[in-house]
Length: 159
Picture (cartoon, helix red, strand yellow):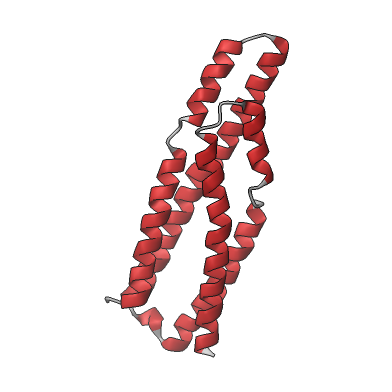
């Protein structure tokens, strides 16, 4: 049963990362897209947040059960990996989800400003500022580094 649980954990981890890869690609593409209407089309390919939440649960349940079956909860590496995952989750929520809101509102303001001819320069500056925000870089670095730490902890079980 332990091997099946590890298999499911890895399977859902791959699906989880695949869904996040789409998010990351969209975030990085926002930075290079000067057209606000076109940038809004990137939202069409991004998976819904509920999918990410479901995959998080599906990836976590077999991991927790497998850790209990193997007696890993007495080891420090399991607790550190959970802590790292929680830190990654916080950063992703704060900077990842926050970036989508910033981009969307700035793009919509610029589209409206272009149609009405009012506050065009301010709306353009806001959109450029949103596109150049450091959020995609922050979540990419934290996500990749955090994943590397978790993989190291799970593979080598150092303590």
